[in-house]
Length: 118
Image 1 (cartoon, rainbow, N blue to C red):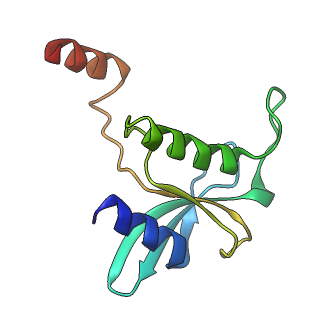
Image 2: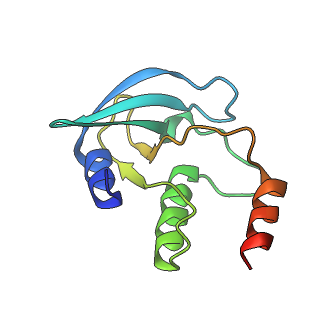
């Protein structure tokens, strides 16, 4: 799916909670998002499940949406597609495309890869 299609699915699709992501500091859920014949996995963070931080005001979900928009505006492409949903199973919150972890890649391997390309 293209990024534009993913955004449409995340914004308009039916959200089904698949399970909780237990090691998150906030209430965070793995969800399936379906819009017509398009399906994707997502990470849903309802606003009411946010745990306040001592060094930031509340609103982590909105900051995640802002981070995505800024990444796109600057042509960085480093933040997965992220939207704000008013209507979701546990109330308003952020919804982001799920990215499968690759534990063989991390800061140091990415830094080395970047160094080889320059």
